[in-house]
Image (cartoon, rainbow, N blue to C red; front, side, top):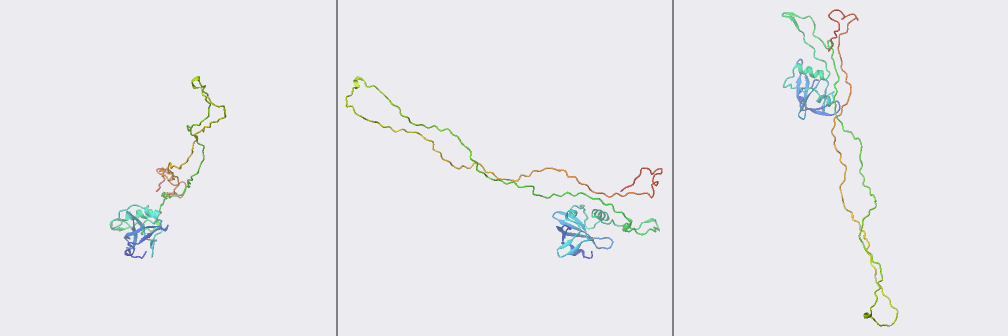
Amino acid sequence: MTTQAEELLGAQVIGADGKVVGTVEQVFRDDVDGTPAWARVRSGKTGRFVPLGSSQVSKDGLSVPFDSQKIMGGPNIDAGQHMSAAQAEELSRYYGLTVPTQQRRTTEPGTQDDQAMMTDSDWLVRQEERLQVGKETYETGRVHLHKYVDVEPVEQAVHVFHEEYDIERIPITAQERISGNIQEGDQEIILHEERAVFRKEVVPVERVRLVAKRVEEDKTFKDEVRRERIEIEPENSSAGTGPGNQGQSPRS
């Protein structure tokens, strides 16, 4: 990457999933050739590192070949103003990059080792999958609230009266002897009764509505991750079975 470090400061970082991760707040150079190697991405109060080797600068910002979850799930490293070799190696292993080669070592004072500097082909990089669990919200169903009108019979006792006719006959005594002519006559009375009068009124009794209730729960999800294993394989089946070597299986 030939872009100057000063040009990257404040640039918007876009992950491989198209999401904006944050902005570049600091650039760390490679200790060997001085080119920009790592960028610290600031997202809110969180800072994470992303390699610059395969990134591209465009008018929209800095595009990196890692998604936002991969970047924000990286190691939380406090590099200060300079990134150490151990920190760079830890980040390289996390992103699956080639581990930096070791420099030529001297065996004894004044004697140079004839072994050439180790190249990338001299290393086996062991990788493993790590499960990253995120959460998404899905629609699981809809509940519809409908108001119906039901008709039901109602009985209520009401105390009423009604009038009936009756005939009263009272004999006339000698002291009340009344004289008169025999003639026709009539009498009329009015009979009454009480009747129940029904009147209906609409009275509100309660408010009803649908609300979504959040229920918190813990669920266990199972999956499988792959992990690479590096072992020494003998050239023939008899190798490694001698005294002192039986049952040994070096692994990383």
